[in-house]
Image: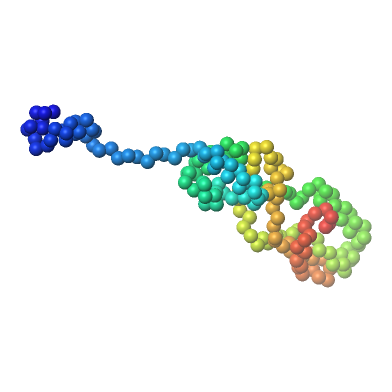
Length: 195
């Protein structure tokens, strides 16, 4: 190295430094963030989910914006943390309106009407609203995901139940008001009691 320093305009220390360091300067790379959250972050996440049932509806990618402690970790870290806490995502279910009790009430209603109005002329005089309902919803009912714990039963989880604010429109199929329609009351649904 001394010979190189003598033959070049560089000092001995510069030659020694150049021979011991890499040819291309290596930039210090940022350390990748761990895919695991700290115990403090896990506690904050669990507290947020337990604080209010509506927090289960928040998409996982949006949790980072609602919890300041989750802003720096990536989405993979949040997903891993949710799985570590025992949560998974499922779609919201809508309980079927056509239950055996409703079907039985429909049959009983038809039998009662046929006994009360046995003649065809009776059906021309009495206004009977016997039509299928049509829902008009005032909100988006697309596919929605909700956070469920692995120890919870999705069928009994209250956040899974749809509570719509739509309206049912019925129309008369016989009688003097045939063709006219009316709006079913908002607080009454197609249950066995309403039939």
